[in-house]
Image 1 (cartoon, rainbow, N blue to C red):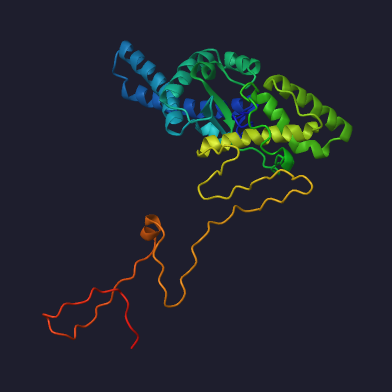
Image 2: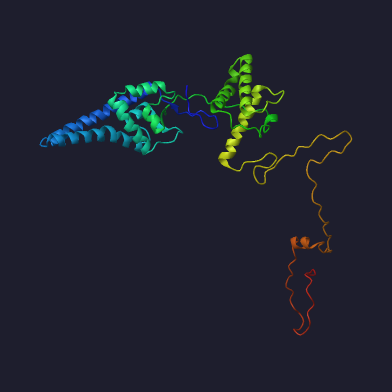
Amino acid sequence: MSELVTGEAVALELRPAKLPSRVLALLIDMVVAWSVYLAVTLGLLAATASLDDAAAAAIAVATFLLVLVGVPIAIETLSHGRSLGKLACGLRVVRDDGGPIRFRHALVRGAVGVVEILMMFGVVACIASLVSARGRRLGDVFAGTLVVRERVPTGQMAYVPAPPPWLAGRFSELDLSGVPDGLWLAIRQYLTRMGQLDPQVGWGMAERLADDLVARTGAPAPVGVPPAAFLAAVVHERQTREAQRAFGGAATEGSAPYPGSYTPVAYAPSAPGSPTPAPYPPSVPHAPLPSAGQWAPPSSGAAEAEAPRAVPRAVPESGPRDEPRQPSTGFVPPA
């Protein structure tokens, strides 16, 4: 089954539409379009009965192009790829990358659809859809679009198991640019369903997928690591890179990912008889606090700048103004 796969090897829920659902949606659209066309044509014939044959032919051609070509293009553009029939069948026209279509995409699909659907009665469109792997007709190929299913059956969401802790971050230098999306999807499907497989069958599948992954990356797998754990660790590394690329602030190995976060320090085992290193860095020595009634001057200019200064209090002057005042020392005697 063909599915839309993102760069993170995640299968989107929007799946390419099958030919029967597309034919049913097209039939609904054609019935509505031809009904409107016949009603408009009958009204114009009654209104232009007095005109000559050339004017009547011009009005008929204009009505055909407007109702059967222009209106579907306008509806697909305004509804972002959902006509009446596609809305009833749960389908939508999207770009190849999964984004919404624009006017140029709807215009190309409508112009090519005049030939392969209206003039050829849909035979060319059916053959092209059967030949294409994703069920695209010629209009989709030229416009770069795809008809997908919007309503899909919901099921239990499967999660990729986390790798062993001792393998986390071990493949940070591995080049994953040469791994195709199909291999990522196969690895992800195996990891989500390996608990349901026979142990021997699952081990063989994991070995084949690991060999394919090693051939694409060009780096050998670590010795003694089970193939399933190796696959889980590499997928986890890819998801980590995609998350860092999406949210920014990629953290390098050995550095804290965010300012102020704690980074554990790993110490090597010490030899017998050697002193055990302290688990935390030694604290900065502080000068002893002065005892009561003493005052210690700062030892350096930096300490003096950092130390809080005592603010002298105002002392009422008791003597005359012409008496010289003693310099204030900031010390207030007790009352």
